[in-house]
Each structure stands twice: as structure tokens, then as C-alpha cells.
Amino acid sequence: MKFLLIAYYFGDTTDVGAQRWTKNIKYIQQLGWEPVVFTFNQKYNEYSEIEIINNKAIEPNGLYNSIFKKKVPSDILSNRKSSLFTKLLVFIRSNFFIPDSRILSVSSSKKILRNRLLQNDIKLIVSTGPPHSMHLIANSLKDEFKLPWIADFRDPWTGIEYFENLPLLPFAKRLHKKLEHKILSASNSVITVSDSWAKHLRELGANNTTVIYNGYDPDDFTETKNLPQKISIAHFGTYPQTRNHQKLWEAIESWSKDPECKRLLSIDFYGFVYETFEEELEEYTFKDCVNIKSAIPHKEATKKMLDYTFLYLSLSDTSLSEGRIPLKFFEYLATGRKIIATGKKGTDLSKLIESLDCGYYINYGEEHQIKDILLDEMKTLGSLKNTNRKNIEQFAKNEQAKQYVKLFDECVKRNN
Image 1: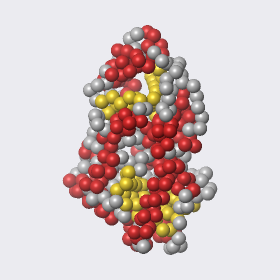
Image 2: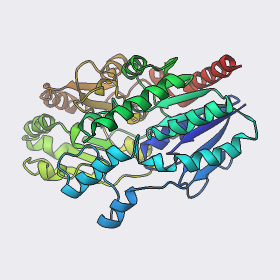
Image 3: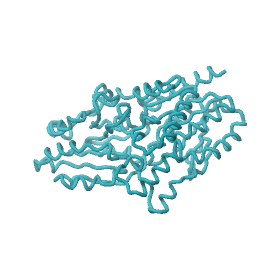
Image 4: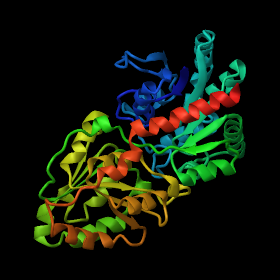
């Protein structure tokens, strides 16, 4: 049977939004469901075994590009220190492009997909967001063609960490909430990535909610490397100001006062970091141990992770961050390297790290613990015990594909 996947991000890009379904599809395909992928701005198709329908997105972000001669910052919606002009752009984007700037492509997308669905060989629609305008496309087609529809929420909608900080007018906030409820209640099933977010979506009216974690692709982790003989720490992906932990850096500063500790230390960030991050590190003596690097393609990133002793991720101190379990956590897990994570107490991420015994989770206000952690790890440097891979196989994409296929089958059966 065939299913239609509506995904703004798809393919081997540096954008984390592309990885969930780009990686899911090949294993779902092996279990008998054939994908038809509808996506945007794909310049080439390396997935020749998959039918891909491409649409050209209408991007208001082009105005920013033309004025500033650079890409829109990843934290443009959450950065409170933006210029006056950027704040004006965010105000316009927040209030007049609802649910997101991709709303401009919804009409053309529905027209393209109507022609494809007339072939009458597609049995199920899956939409993934954000951007949540992909769900609006799916909702319209579901009603028109009487097809079951699964809405996949990689992030919440009005519960996303920066939503309450957007300069929303009352009418815009009401419209967001109205559309969110419409999507959640109209879809036949909802998928999300953590227990806390599943609870949140159910409270907003979601039907038949299922948790399927982001997971990892075992094909990306076939190599092995010896552990480095130093305290090397790496962070991969976006690092906005809301996820920065100043007290953590203060604790590392205290630890690195010992020349031997500092000699062993290196901290690398791959991808976007907020504008003033490097400037804020200037006050620390270990600042020359920190390297800010450009984002690298996903295939390179998963191999690069093996060059480090520890892999770092952090959560924001914001609403619903207790449900955020980033994709990189599962990829970090697959490397066997120890994970260092920081965030609020009692998060879904902290529970996973504890149950899997795969590293350290440091609560807000307890960042001083990193000093003792690094001192202990120095004693066994180069011979650190890797994570037991048998414990993590449940998060492999080939195992998760069975969950998707079961859900697909149930959706179609209920619709007949």
C-alpha cells in the first residue's frame, strides 16, 4: 500500500527537521508501505527508489536575505536582543503568516496533490510539522478524498518553547489556538516524540496519540573509534540563548583552573550559536579551548561524534521543555559515547538518561556537579565504558518502523 508523506524538510540536509522521516521511510518501505513524498525546494533526488513530488516554496524570508545578505538566524523567533528592524519582521511574521511563513505555499500544494491523489492508489496521508502549515494541507485533502490522516508533531504548536514570547496580537493568538485544535481533533491519529508532549496534545483534543521517539538510523553508526585521551566535549546542532547555561561554564572555569585539566579540555560547537555566545565566553580562561564550527551535513556529523569523549546537549528553561528529547540525543546514544545534558528537573530526557545509564543529566541550579564529574572521568580517561548498545536497540529506526506500520494498518482499517 502507498502513503503520502507531506514534509517541508526532506533529504540529506543539515536541517534536523529532515532527518526523522528521511530516515524512517526506508525501513517502513521494507515492511510493505510505499511512500510518496511531497516536499519543497529539493534540488536533486538521490532517493530514486521513492516517488518524490517537489513544490517551490514561497519564502518571505527572502526579504531578510536580500537586505542582510545572509540566511535568517535560527533563533530569529526567540532572540530578544534583535535589531528594531528584525523585531518588526518577527512581528509581521507572527501575526500575518499563521501558522508559519509556509502558509503561502498551501494553496499551490493542494492543487499539485489533488492531481496526484486522483490516481486513487494512496491509502493514507501523513503530515509532519513544524512547519504546521503542512498539517493544513493534509487536513484539506483528507476531507476531500476521504483518506485517513496521521499528524506527526515533532514539536508542539502553541506549546513550543518560544511561542509565549512572540509579539502576537490577540486575534493571532486566538487563530493559532483555533487551528491547532482543529488539526488535533480532525486527524485520525497523532504521533509525537515524548510522553509529556503526548499528554499536552491530548489535553488540547488530540485523537489516538502515540509516542514514537526520534530514534537513530543504525546504518549511520557502523564505524567505531577509540576514545580520545582528553576531555573533549562536542555539541551538534542549534544552540540558542535559551539553552545556554552560564553556571555550567562557571563550574568548568573552576575545574580548568588546574593547568592539567585545561590542557586536556576541548569544547566544540557544530552549527548555529546565538550571536553573543562567543563574546560571553571571553571572561573565562578556558575560552581558547572552545571552537565554534559551521554546521556539517548529517552523514558527516554522525561520524564526527565519535571523535569526542562526551557529547553535550541542553534544554531551555521554558514551557513544555520537559518533553523535549532532541534527535541528537538518540544519535549520541548510538555512538556509545557518554552524554552530558542540562535542563529542568524531572524531564523525559533525564528519565531516559537515568534508565539507560548513558551519561549525566544535570538539573538547573546544580551545574556545579560538572566539576566533580570531570574530575572523576579524568581518572579513567581513554578507557571509559561505552553505552551498552543492546539497551538502545529499541530506538533504532528499523525497530521503530514496526510501530509506524502497525499504526498505519490500524488507521486504514478504522477508516474502511
